Amino acid sequence: MLTILFDGIAYGMLLFVLACGLSITLGLMNFVNLAHGAFAMAGGYVTVIMMNRYGLSFYWCLPAAFLVSATVGAILERLLYRPLYKASHLDQVLFSIGIVFMAIAGVDYFMGGQQQLINLPPELKGRFDFLGIGIGRYRLFIIVLCAFLVVTLQLALTKTRFGSQLRAAVDDGRVARGLGVNVSLVFSLTFALGSGLAGLGGALGTDLLGLDPNFPLKFLIYFMIVVTVGGTSSISGPFLAALLLGIADVAGKYYVPQLGAFIIYALMVLVLILRPHGLFSREGGR
Amino acid sequence: MTAPVETQKLARDWISRSNRVRLWEIALWVIAVAAIFLLPSKLLILTEITILAIFALSLDLILGYAGIVSLGHTAFFGLGAYAAGILARDYVSEPVTGLIFAGFISGLFGFATSFLVLRGSDLTRLMTTFGVAMLLAEVANQAAWLTGGADGLSGIMLTPILGLFEFDLFGRNGYVYALVVLAVLTFIARRLVHSPYGLSLKALKLNPRRSAMIGISATRRIVAIYTLSAVYAGMAGALLAQTTSFVSPDVLAFHRSAEVLLVLVIGGTGYLYGGVVGAIIFTLLRDWLSVVTPQYWMFWIGLILIALVLIGRERLTRWPALLNRKATTRAATQLAEEPR
Image (cartoon, rainbow over all chains, first blue to last red; front, side):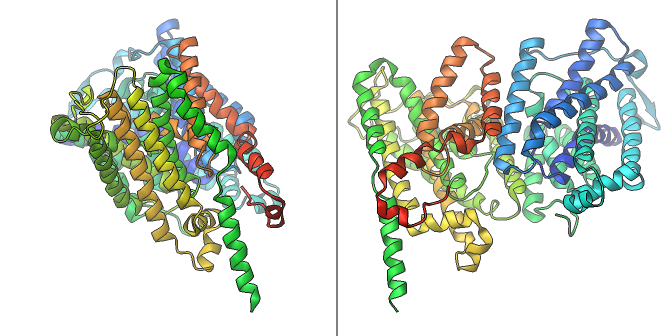
């Protein structure tokens, strides 16, 4: 029982890291980016290539995955995403579906369609008992790392100059620009950061979620749930949503496997009916 | 006192003018019928195109006329396919009955879920439609006793259409059947969108706040068009199930929702024939690509999508507006051209 809770928390934390970039682009910048999973997939494949082809340590792969995804994100943002910030949602949807399709086929072409496996370092394998709770070492690692990230992000968003610039740019881009905030640079950096985090999440999730070319579509619904249910008020909304989703999904699969993913979809639709702007929505925002 | 009468007359004239049958429409139907005789070996792919055209037409009703972006339109398509398939397998094997039954079931479901798209922003709608489609896909996958689960629904045996025309090996009657359905549905949709109701939908799409102010209420109109669109999509699904005698769980998969969006966008939204044009282009393109690069055709479809958006859809799909402009008389130019 508590083990399931623990696994659910780890899963939820991972989902949060994967999805928080999306909660910024989709929630704050109002860009429907269905291709977010592609950045996560990029991170996952960076890990796979580095570990399996070049035999590098798992710990080196994590920052590498972050950097590669962030760079890809920054380049794409400059070249492709930027002209579409003001486009209609339909255009954004079509565009990002196009990116997803290209990413899927491209990865399939270069890496093959099979599931990718990685060999975690020995100290992260297995599980131990703590007060009668079975704790997976790797899951503990994820929880610690993600908790650290959450705190850092929250502090960065609320306490630093960049955080306030971002919030200003999002709340009212024109006024922020008038006050001397370089809005397009802020958006670029934020987009890169979000993509990088997704890449990191993808790298961490290679072992837990599995990785194959269909990753961006398979987990798209999870990302979207986190963002829409969590709302966009702060880091904490999506974080709580991700935790809830993680726990609900793990518990649901354990206790009522025949219902499968039914529960979370039903929950999401229900939340959206009752609270169209998410459980933890912000008042007065755009 | 004469002013309102004058305006009414103008409006009535405008409606009847926009309702007039265009030359290219007639040409399109002539070609579609001629294909029965000219391309007897390609009837299966023509059937596929026709079904896709109906599906895209149904999406056009909500996207092009009511402005609802749906990421889960395949829910109705798949539901219709399963409804027709199950009916044919277990109860009635007459296709037209199945078609109507599928339309009815999908319509009911569309009516029930239409209340979800009334609220919230574009994003919420995207998510709810997407979620509903995923939900159905999960149900179809789990309820193996009814739907055959991941193996798909097989064992559909159909009796001749209306007891007269049997499905033949070359798909000839199948194509004629699908074409007749497409023609009937297009005709109905045509009457509908050129009616005052259709115009009020367009007003809602272009500016909901202003249309609310001049007394056009959104709720009933959107519920109605969404339900109708679901009926259409369900019928398209039923046609697929009947012409292929098989329903795979793939009918509810996300990529179908994406595909139908693409089809419609290639063909252009908001003039009803976008689905037909898009379906022709898309199917031929996909066939060609999957011959050239089997397995990786998705890549090129993705590239086309991106190019389409970056270049600007409007620029590519303005041809019907241009054709119309030539066809309309000078009187029409006095009234402001309908902005696309």
